[in-house]
Image (cartoon, rainbow, N blue to C red; front, side, top):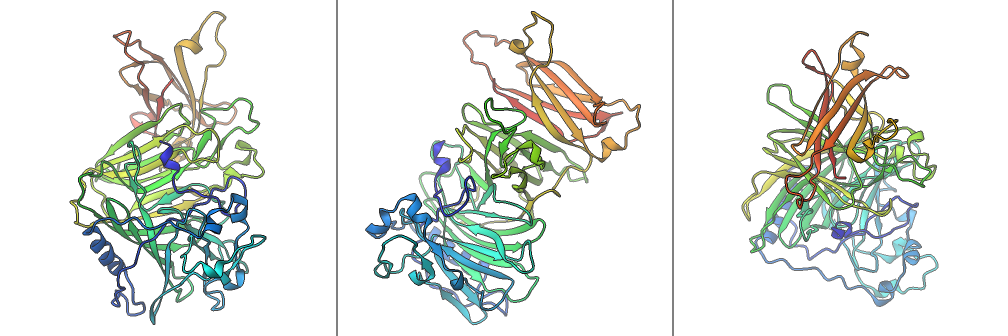
Length: 534
């Protein structure tokens, strides 16, 4: 599972704000001159033509060769290379967005960048004069056209007088964005391929087309071409900055004919980090929690105006965990940073309470499939160990396009929540027990707090029930719902006991728990679901 970290490389950034390496591009086929708009001579269809042609040809791995002096650079040397502010794209035009580029790193991973204007499409060739190389003694004029290591964009996100970083594209198909008042945390990807398999494939954005902003208030538009051993893809990103920045993604994906078919095609993938939290505290660390996301939220659609909301708290497991949630029609899913209080983290540098949640909403019907969640062990907070993505029930045939459209809302304090009630914290552990009672060795207990309008509207004497179920290898010993006298909110206590396997040699299987609050057969909350592995 270590392959999941592939594609990451340090660039100038504060500690624990992980940044991405860019990945290599291949030769660009001839650019089309036709577009879907009278203003710009480029469209998703033009990128899709290139992707379709590439899908019909054998995959050619791009060269990662770089000049010897660049290949010898160490981490701190690379950090000393900075893009010159005066070279920032579109700054002189005083437009709503600006862009600059990462330098290619020692691994030689590069992308080709183009600008799209009403006059046409032009390549932005590598120019060493755009960079300050700091203390490094290098001869970049002899390097030729290296391409760039990635692209980042800026807008007036937090101030009308200063442009903050808005969105970054760098490393395989990784990208991440910010809403106002947020700090970088989790990331998105264009595509995830066999992420939970023995060998993950990392499709790469090899080319970008940056549409020159036309008017204030219009979204930032970026096109990207994807390529890898078993697929190609064309992407359009419309980025709308705000309190919650929204990234609209429209893509056309083609599978290559191959004797190694894709097992799991992950759409709208998200990547995050969970080191420890309230459900899994870490002895010896002064911080109560350390994570970029604390749970997976899923919303289903039953086609009649209803559906189910699910909340799965994240874990840092001892070994890899792959779980999935089958859905006939998806309303949305996301890796959420629900806990927004500084006191929950107490980290004055990392400021995890300011990391965004990412909520994915389909813009076309994804059809039946499953949300898959991958969790595996991380030794510290510098490595991502969580992935969530949508897996369609039916794979497209090789060479046939798969069109998808969705949006990602990068949310802060005001984020997507179920309409009735939701979990605010999940704590695991046994409290006081009578001397001699070895409850901690036999049973597992959770204390879960809820909030929400359906719970707030209940009369004081309302009878609330915790509806709890466990998988066949466990027995629910206790399931209670009651008001917390200190806060007035509703609390649930669930205690389960693992049943012994029928065969003594049979290994213990994880316990699946589900619970929600109910009053007179009316559902009051989302479904809390937890996987007990030990």
